[in-house]
Length: 121
Image 1 (tube, rainbow, N blue to C red):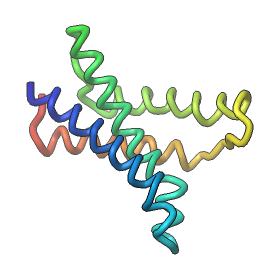
Image 2: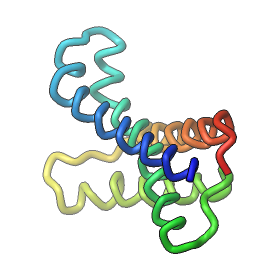
Image 3: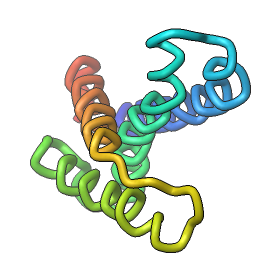
Image 4: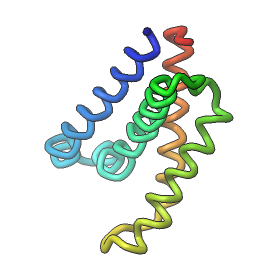
């Protein structure tokens, strides 16, 4: 049960941050922090949210949860390929950015660190 609560908390936090960043933070904060908020912060939180969502779906199917970077990294690489490589093919204005891959991975690793820190199994 603790794992579900943790994952739901991560999803709510990521969604809340996305809204806050989209509607207010990225428009009011300047300098390097503003640049990071505009370019990569949402991708960082997306990596954590994707890992949490995957973990919830696996638990729902009574499958073993995500437990290591060996599972998280390929999942986020696949998601990154869809968003970064395939999206520019059908969405005008979408661009390919290698640093987004790093942001997704960092978010996934933060999610794993949170699981370990809260001793979630």
